[in-house]
Image 1 (cartoon, rainbow, N blue to C red):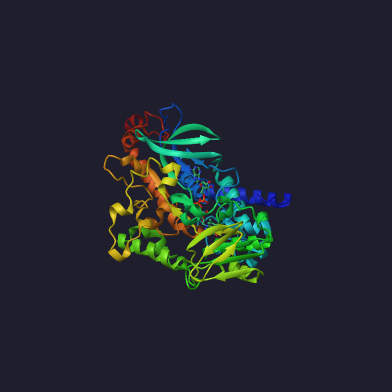
Image 2: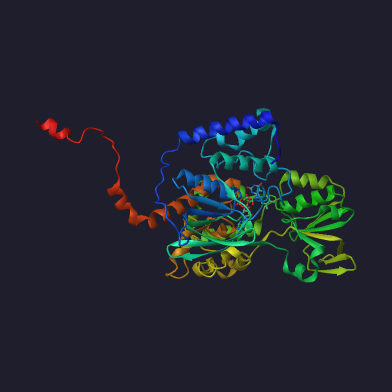
Length: 483
Ligand SMILES: Cc1cc2nc3c(=O)[nH]c(=O)nc-3n(C[C@H](O)[C@H](O)[C@H](O)COP(=O)(O)OP(=O)(O)OC[C@H]3O[C@@H](n4cnc5c(N)ncnc54)[C@H](O)[C@@H]3O)c2cc1C
């Protein structure tokens, strides 16, 4: 966290206390409703175990705790503070989402990013702001976790998720030590790359040594790029952010190549940010959801205006539209890139090509992958609407739960995918800041619904055993009035 002066910290503590008071005032009904239970190892099981402590994991945990779940664990493989992209490989100065996008704060103003920012920097600073600075967003998320009592267990890699009777077994590596734990339900909140990996295209990996290229969404030693010609593939926001970072670090040039004839001008994400679509996306017919997913693949979105303008203003920056790379090869220490317009020569490549879908690349999916229904199992698109990439994604239920491929694998419905696996079933915005207000309640309801159904056998005995002295009068009261 960027260290704030002591007086600012104390103002934030006052805000935290006010937010906790608000949460408390609106807490009904947060009473615990599941009997504590031990797993096969004799230790208490988690009601919900969340894989991933990025913004989704933290905010889902906060919501679940308000639904009366006491044992909600959040595990993350990374070091404390490095959850999500914000302090590691995200290189933009400010968020790509407008500052007015709200939704994670339960309608409680004192828990909102706006109040946090105004408390830290003043109301005028918020008014002057266009988008929230990237690292402030992460500082806010850390503060939010603290206020809502969400604790992340870091340096904990989830390596498998499997059945254990009517529980789910979650295998982890803590440090490097294997450790199995047990949960009633599991939410996978592993980010946009949770359906695969940030991976360079195969033709580049096959042709070049690893030192010749980096993926835009990974660690890059920009100091090494001083005086170098950098070739960037892709036209998304990360292409521009990495070009800016490379040029500012002293690269001689940074060229952004892409296949399209011109950059997209319209952001289709804004078109589907309506309360109707965001709340009820999974109620749409399969064919509609499929076509929306294809539309987004086809159209894509423009880079943010700020990054676009900053990049264009830097000497050494160049855009190369209609320039797909057809092959690459090492020539001495330089890299030769073939394009339909002739070869280009660079010293280093940055691949801003997004995430590949590859369920086999995810350790946590190794047992689940073959047991869950995929879009290819449930939906047959017309011949001109096929898309192998989308067909490989799971067909989720309305609460982000996996649907079993075979009828005897009902346990997979105790696992929920709030990550890149959900884009066809739930639309493209679930995990983004713009999705929080409408998508998060769906996964929270999905989890609590499953927990209730699994706990149904306890409902009548609990009702019969319920005792509360709501009318505290002597036991013989009725007898005495009868006299
Ligand atoms: C460069 C960049 C910029 C972006 N900017 C914006 C933006 O401005 N606005 C916006 O709305 N969205 C933005 N996004 C999309 C963004 O990824 C999400 O909004 C946000 O990070 C999603 O949060 P999340 O918690 O779902 O996933 P993440 O933030 O990706 O968090 C996932 C977490 O899961 C952990 N994890 C993964 N696998 C395992 C495992 N097996 N075991 C344990 N832990 C695991 C990871 O360490 C990580 O901390 C951006 C994405 C990128 C890459």
